[in-house]
Length: 149
Image (cartoon, rainbow, N blue to C red; front, top):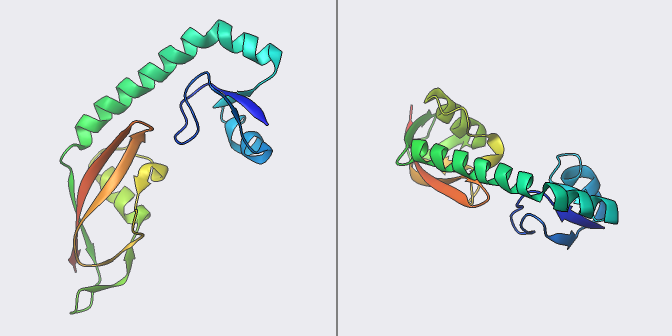
């Protein structure tokens, strides 16, 4: 299914690109969340008329993400978890615990989907780097120290 992107989508394209995607991806994600329009003549014409509006909206989102990135720059979180004497955790520290700790710092703009644990949940005591994707172009790293209770 061909669609016209109205927002930048990571690994897919930029605003105004006409891309071919699977119909389920378009129907279930791109179209309902207003990230794309069907690539018909009518919608392409409508997009060209509103292109400046879409570009301005994208620039505003990028500016907001840059401002938020400054707020989490150098952020260091300390999370306590039950651990064995060897340093292995009983269970793990995942996205939910990290998000809760971030929200306790008053940074409510960070969403669950923006936290990236590239190696999976943390299963031992120590210091770790976790990426937070605030925008398709802005990814910041935060430091997390997991301590035994």
